[in-house]
Structures are given as C-alpha cells and as structure tokens.
Amino acid sequence: MMAGKAVRPTVYLLLFALFTAIFLVVNFPQDQVAAYVNQWMKENAGNVLTAQAASAQFPLSIRLRDIELASGGRKYPVGDLSLSPTLASLVRERKSFSALLEGDWGTLPIDMAFDRERWEVGFNGDGIELSMLPAAPDLPIDLEGELSIDTRIKGTGGGKPVFSGEGSIHLVDAVVGGDALELFGVDEIKLTKVRLFWSAEDNLVTLQETGIEGDIMGDIGGTILVLPGNPGNSRVNLTLNLRPSLEAQDRIGPLMSLLGSKTGSSGGVRVTIDGTLGEPKFAL
Image (cartoon, rainbow, N blue to C red; front, top):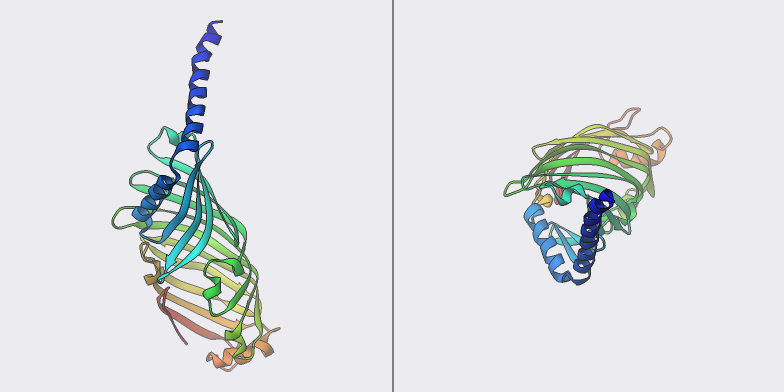
C-alpha cells in the first residue's frame, strides 16, 4: 500500500505533463513556431537556410516544411525536416535531437546536439538520388546514380562560426551526360565507384584517400576553405588527375585530348580548380 501511494503522485505528474504537451501542440501559434525556428537558423547559419512553415507535433517534435537553401543569389528547395528532442535534453542545458530530412531526392537521418557555445551534427544516409538533388537542374551536366554520406561535424556559433569534422562520400553507378559532353562527341560517362574521404579543421576541408573508377579513373585532392555564412564564396583549391579506362579509351580518349592530355598510353590529364564554390575556375 505504501508503495502504491508513493507511485500515485508520479503517475499524476506524468499525466499532467502529457495533457499539457497535447494542449501546447494543438494551440501553439504555428506562425510563431516558424518565426522562432528561422530566427535560430539565422543566428547560427546566416541566411543560408529558411523554412517556409513549421509546426509543433505530438508528443514533442517540430516539423519544418519547404526548407530552402540560399546560394549564389538563388534559393533551392531541400525538403521537410522532422525534429524530435531526446528526453534527457528536456532537463539539461545541452540539447540533443534526432531528425529526418526528406525530399524528392531521398531521406537523410540526422542527429544533433548543441548548447549555448557548441554544436555537433551527424549525417548518415544511403540511396540519395543524384538527379533529384536541389541544385541538379542548374548544373551544366546531367547526373544520375546514388549517393551515400557519412559525416560528423562540430563547431561553435556566434559572430565567427568555426567547425571541424570528418566524413566520407560514396557514389555508386553514377552516369554523367548532357549537352556539355555531347559537344565533345561523348554521350555519357559511367562511374562505377567514387570514394571521397575528408577531414576539416578551422573551416578548412582537406580531401583525403579519394578514388574514381569507371570510364574515367583517377583521384582528387586539395582543400576548400568554407565560409559558413556565405558558402558560395568559399575558397577552392583542388587538383584532379584523370585518365580513361582501357575499356573506354577509344570513346573517352578524344575528350581527354581536347582537355589537354599528354600523348602516351595513359592519356591522362590534370585539372586544377580554384576560385570559389559559386564561381569555380578550371585550368589544365
């Protein structure tokens, strides 16, 4: 009996919290939710990300709809984000969330944690469709294939955001085509596998252990100095070493020659990329 009396106040407290949560979800002004979320994103990511609508959902989650990414004076639709806090974060200063980003391109599970000074985000997703990515229609080439990403970054907010981290990107059965290639007499280039490993420190991303396999073989290396509040102006310093595979040499070889490949059995070419992400400059 004493145990039952001790448990009863706890049950009442949980029921009170449950009904309070239901009341808040149903009655909280949704426009204020969107305004609060956009203000938080502006403080932590500049004007790069915005949500057109946001709503609180039962039991304790927020859904952001029609998220847009701003870059180079344009806005690209990203998708919707469902965000749920862990129970422990409700009573701690450091907040942690699990999230799911969904769009026409696929889904991307996300976990994140932050307090007043620091934040940490992890992405781990498979089967992302290249042709459906937000900026794909604006590229001078057509892309198909699947992307996998495994990334963890952490950093500080405030007036001068700084981040570090590491991760990998994998492309499988990618196909590059479009008018830009047809001008050089190539209908498409198949890439069976592209592996890219990177690390970052003080906003400087360094590419490591990269590899390209398929009609074109090779590797890529270099750095990207990321400006969190203005990614389009991030500085690029990359080098690509490319050569046609033996099977595709007759088909891809003329294109490589036009790019400046040296005579010889490999038919390879080195391409350097500098400038900014928004306006990259290519040189041979």
